[in-house]
Length: 312
Length: 249
Ligand SMILES: Cc1cc2nc3c(=O)[nH]c(=O)nc-3n(C[C@H](O)[C@H](O)[C@H](O)COP(=O)(O)OP(=O)(O)OC[C@H]3O[C@@H](n4cnc5c(N)ncnc54)[C@H](O)[C@@H]3O)c2cc1C
Ligand SMILES: Nc1ncnc2c1ncn2[C@@H]1O[C@H](COP(=O)(O)O)[C@@H](O)[C@H]1O
Image (cartoon, rainbow over all chains, first blue to last red; front, top):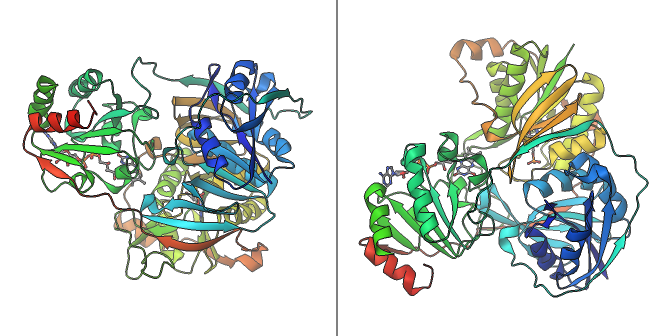
């Protein structure tokens, strides 16, 4: 039996969609028994959402005032404690999971696999390296605990409809006080979330200004898409950092990805490899983005975006 | 002495097109340009700025790797690091080993801060900083995009999925640098000359007392699945028609 503990990411009382994807990954480990751990200040609703994911055997709820907002230094010792008796501890490869899981692995002195894209056996995993330009198969020694982050773009969410039992757990651990949350600035928008949207329209350096970037927003709104951006567009201030797509931004897998005025640098392509259909609009017919695009349109974006909208 | 340790990893330059060796044993490295991991350059730049603002006295660049890592450490010295330490090994070292080496050096150097890159662009692990903070039992502030030091504390703005998060950590602490933390300075010729005279101490894993036993065996490298090259459509109308046919718009 492989006993897998998944650390739930959540905010504002909502379970992050990445958790159901971690469940899919965990379910692909042979003979898996899946537990989700929810660390929260008042996590009843989140625990309920976790319990309704199909394939989950139980949910452990650790309510403590120090657990929200989530800080890796506060959560890691608690995860390590709950990890006892588990063969694997999984978290999503989001900024939350990437911050937390290596700290957990070090406390457990466990092997740590980042960005699992497929499970080959209970000890064997495939993961991308070199910005996705190579895939390695790695193997941990049998019998050793394994900590991993799950590359969320590689998995579909597990279905709803489960009814796992929820257990409240008290851990007598004094949370460290050396790390304090100050604030988070998250631009709220009514648009679909970049990481879960089925359609994404992204703009690059070619947009040239914040004002022009509104063209991307206009098109995105027309087709109900989320907005993304290249690093160059974010660095230039046309779009906020959380919209960056790529190696150091978000790795996404929408049904439709439209890249406008983006050259297609390898670090950007890393973020969109799993998109079902890629559309590229670029005035340079030699731009590398066309190497990966299912549909390419060569021309000036300022003329083409209105044309597209007219045809919709 | 208020000291900052910075991790400098030697990696294949980010502009090089990576090719997997046909036998799956790794990627092609012969004759390939090597550089400082881009995030480490940013980490070093931040350490230098902290020192220049008067919040630190000395910046020490630390590299773990083969003898040739001296090249990257010399570049770090030319950028402005005061001295460098090479921990020599020809083995491929995993993040937990790097973390343990850093911890050993912390015990002799007593830094107020360790600044690393958020990830190495070869293994893309994004692990060392968090692991070091754990075994050192100190705070971590990963993916930093702004750092302000004040009265034994660092206020760090972090790039997170939701946007920007600010946390406060007591020093000493481990920070990891994200892309927008700063723009690293260019190295000028006189700096390269000056760097030749700066101290670069060389030691090795055995002397430091850390074993490099890998936790994960790499069984093989494969090239990623290639996407099929698609079609060039002639105009917007044809594009929309194609997308509509596929039910995408
Ligand atoms: C360590 C590291 C990590 C990185 N991580 C990321 C990442 O996560 N995400 C990311 O995106 N980048 C990342 N980068 C940066 C990446 O290398 C590129 O610099 C960046 O993606 C370029 O953005 P761009 O395509 O918008 O700009 P450019 O490369 O400048 O491309 C602009 C494109 O617009 C086209 N164009 C110009 N005018 C028009 C017009 N009027 N109509 C149509 N087309 C036009 C041009 O032909 C060109 O192809 C990273 C780099 C490093 C070193
Ligand atoms: N061999 C090394 N020598 C020096 N620093 C390293 C080494 N490996 C990793 N690091 C540091 O740890 C960071 C994160 O690496 P990783 O966890 O491998 O992605 C890098 O950006 C470096 O700052």
